[in-house]
Length: 385
Image 1 (cartoon, rainbow, N blue to C red):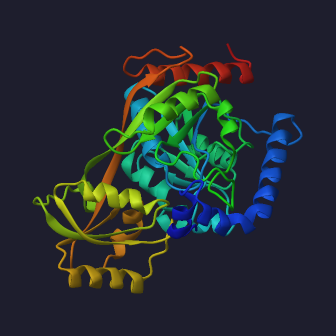
Image 2: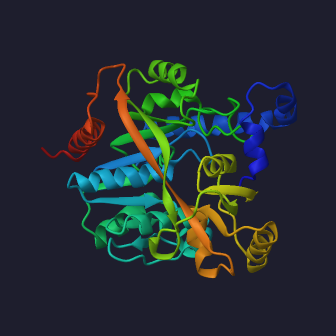
C-alpha cells in the first residue's frame, strides 16, 4: 500500500527539494524500468506467452499507480454496454483480497445476480463494482485469464472488461482504454519507485481510446494536455471526463438527505485523498470539519473505526462520509452512533476530440468505435468471420 504522503511527493514535478529527496531511488527506478521494458519486448516478440479468451477483451488502465478514476470508468463503460444490449463481464486482480494474498485461484465475486464474495476475500474495488452493477458478473484472480475462464464457465458474457489491465500483457486485449488525470498526468515524470509511472508516456502509443479526466470547472491544463496527448498517440480518439457526485448513500443504496451545510467528518483509503477532500468541499450540503487520509486499500480494524467514530463525535459532526471503496469494507462493522454514508462518484463523458479523425463526435459514437475495434481484432485473432 502506498501512503498518501508519497503520492503527494510524486505529484510535485520538477521541484528541487523533492528531486533531491527522491534521487537515491534512481538506481531502483533504472532497474524497474529495464525490467518492464524487457518484459514488454518479450511479449511483443513472442518470447513470453500471451493467452486468449473466447470473447473480445477491453482493457481499462493507466500509466500511473494510484487513483485516476479507473473504477468509475469501468462502471460507466459496463453501464453503457448494458444499455446498448451487450452482456459485459469484469475481470480484476482483487488487490488486497485474501484470495490473491494467499495465491488462491480465480474467484467469482458476482454471477450477475448475487454478490458471492466479501471485500476481505476479493478486495474492495471488485465488490464495489459487483454492488453497483448487479447484472454484471465480476471475477478476480492474479492471473486474469483464469478469472476470465471461470466467469465464462458460469455466466453468459459477450465482452470482458479488464480492470487496471494496461500492463497485464499476459492476456491478449482487443482494445485498450487509457485514463489520464489532467491535473498531474504523469506525476513527476519518473518511474517507480522514484515516481508514480508504471510505464513512460510513450506507452500511450498502444492506446485505442484515451479518457482525460479533468478536475475543476475549467482547468488550465486541459486543452494543452489534449494537444500533447494527441501527438503522443498518433491520433487515438480522446474523451473528456468530469467527476460528478451522484449522491450520498447508506445501506442498500438508500439516499442520505443532508441539509445544506451539515457538519461532517470524513475518512478514506484511496490513492489520492486530496481529490476526495476537494469533492467534499464543493458539496453544498456538507461542511467538512476534518478528514482522515489513510493508505490506499487501508485495512480497518475495530480500534481504528472506533477512533474515527470518536473523532467525529468530538468534532460535532452529524454524519461521517467516506468513499464507496472504503464503505463496502466498513459499513457492516461501523460502530456508530453517527450514521456512515458513502459519496457516490460517477464520470460524465463529453464528446470526444478526434485529432486523427478516427471517431465521430456525436453521442455514444466512442462506444461504437471501441466495440467495433475490439470485435474486429477478436475476429482476426480467432479466425472467425
